[in-house]
Length: 164
Image 1 (cartoon, rainbow, N blue to C red):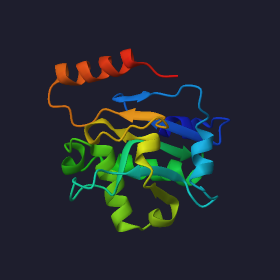
Image 2: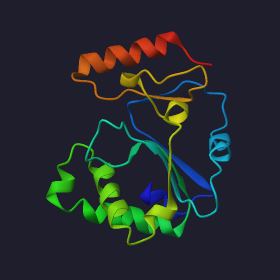
Image 3: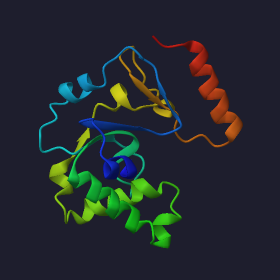
Image 4: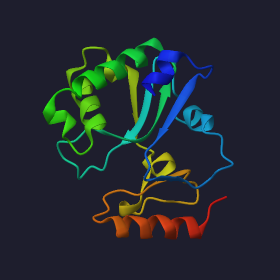
C-alpha cells in the first residue's frame, strides 16, 4: 500500500484485505460502509475493534481496513515500516498491527483523531471464531486457526456455502 501511495493512484480510498478474509457480498459497494460509519474528512484509516479478549493488543484489527489516499497515510505507513526495523515488532506475529498499535498509543501524529475504530466488526470484519457473521456481513475474517488444515477447511467450507 505504501508503494501505491508513493506512486500516486487515482483513488480516494484503498482497501486492505488479509489473505484470511473472504468477501461474502461481492455486489456491495464498500464506499457505503464509509458512509454508514459517518467517516469524516479527518479520518484517514478506518478499522474495526479487535477481539476484546486480546488484552494487550491493539484496540483495532488490521485484517481489513480502509486507507484514505493521502500524504498523512503515506507518512504513517513509512513510520510503520521504520518501526519494523525493531526486532520486537518485526518478530511479532502481527507485526503491522503491533507497529500501528505503538503509533496509536504514542499518538504523536494525531492517530486518535485520524484513525476511526468502528465497533461494527460483524459488518466488515466478522470474526469466524466469535460467530459474528450475519446476513448483512460483507467481509468474513478467518481468525485464530491453530493449524493450516483447520484454516483451509474453514475457508473451503465458507466458499462452498457461497456468497452473493
